[in-house]
Length: 618
Image 1 (tube, rainbow, N blue to C red):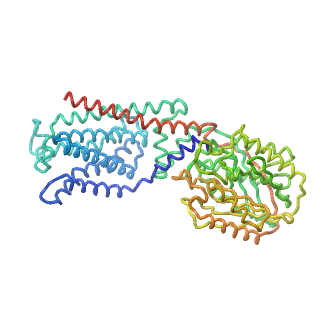
Image 2 (image 1 turned 180 degrees about the horizontal axis):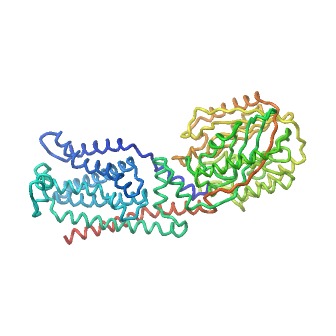
Image 3 (image 1 turned 90 degrees about the vertical axis):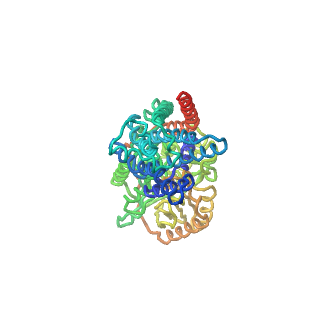
């Protein structure tokens, strides 16, 4: 992850789950009641509360119920919960505007008409906000989105029309019109100042603010359309839909910008003498992101569900450009792994493990017949993903020693989150990329001359009591111990996304029952549904994790038994984000956030200024 991508990921802290519609409605009525008690002045306080619920709450309730109905009739996808939250937000905005207007009246001596003028501006303002939201969520064109967006403003305007007695200014009457469309005697006196031209002014304000929304969207959209061929509103609506309600809209967006790529899928199977699979390492050269269950975010769990033995799905050498665009692509990965398993040769020997450090890069390697297993870490230095091209080059460098297939794991076990400009991404041309290739070459050269012996393997697993919110995914902690001669090597896999600095060293130093050990994470993005940084050890006690790993290693040693091993690689074609697409998307999104705030202020000031000019001439 680059710094730009990190800035984008950090935006997720502003996202929250959409509350259920009945929760939002409860707040709507409660706020309306409080406003009524504070604003209206009747003989009985219950009457004040009732008028607040009626005049403030009813338009909000109508908008809450009807907006999603109208929107879906027009082909949109605004849910009832989103509709209710949107209506509640707009109610809070109107109430806040009226509260400020009331304070201004008290301090300056302006009359009641000033408060009503502010109300008109607020009603036009919520129309503009709702228009922007509906366009983002439902991908409507502006004229279509204006229909569901206008529900709350129209409901409020209708109440004002009926209870202000506006009908008395019009030459319309009759036995049905007067009782139902003109009821000023049942309304607070403050509504008696309304005249028919006020509704024309309100309509003009709505047009002005809609024009502001049009300018705002088109200015932000231009770089997105040119570079990615998509709208910024598509991204915003899809992103909010995923994190707020768990929809799959984001995958549809990613499919539009995705590119086809051929990726290796390497499988390392460990079987008991009777052919029963004891454990399986599955390493597709993709990135398990971008977040939650979107794309390949849930890849480790899906891989584990598809294996017969205990699954070990560590992190491969690939960055966010190799995120799968949809979860359907995971099926392609699993199919390739099964194909590799069918052609997998088996043997019963392995070498002792070898560790080499070059610069900040450490590689732990072990030969499996004519194949090679390499695990890379940069700990205690901070590091994040290793670029796909760097991984391929490292594999090619290792194969020069005479090995066939290489399983190259990025241990992904030490990072400091999103701090600083350099997040530790290992890219082509960097010092770390050359250190990695050199370390892999040295390990492979040494292992090519290392004698191989019969191997025994033991495994252990604990789901752990921790949840994804605490940085641990459903696979928990898994351990595989390989015993070759007098040497024991432990591979520890934690289902999480990177690890707090120093924790990997604590775990490795504690494991006195083995000669070599490495701690890996799956880089699962299930733990990053809302929190952009949720590393292993960030929310749980380090002592508890260290003790758990130590116990699991002892359990794996007790489980040691002779096995047969085999390693094979299958290539498959999947759709991923694509080269530089993640960086482009992140830079555009960050630019939209930074520029959008300033642009929104400018557009708002311009719209309000035009509104004041309209007041001056009317």
